[in-house]
Length: 74
Image (cartoon, rainbow, N blue to C red):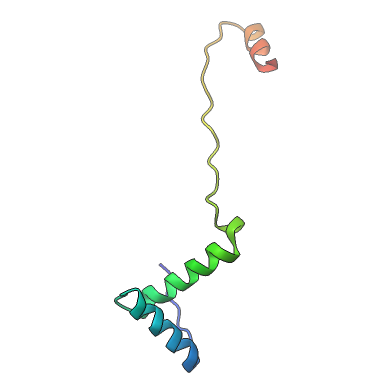
């Protein structure tokens, strides 16, 4: 977890408090996290996609090098 000290204007602080109260959050940290996640989902969808893990390579036993070359060509 990363910790930051931020400065908010009175209006921004009021917005955070409204979000906190509306969604029944325990602290401003939760409200700020919610605001950031909501913004990211709406405005940065391509960046929020999880990285794709490479597919698992299927193993196949070959008895000689010629058979392996044939399998690689397919």
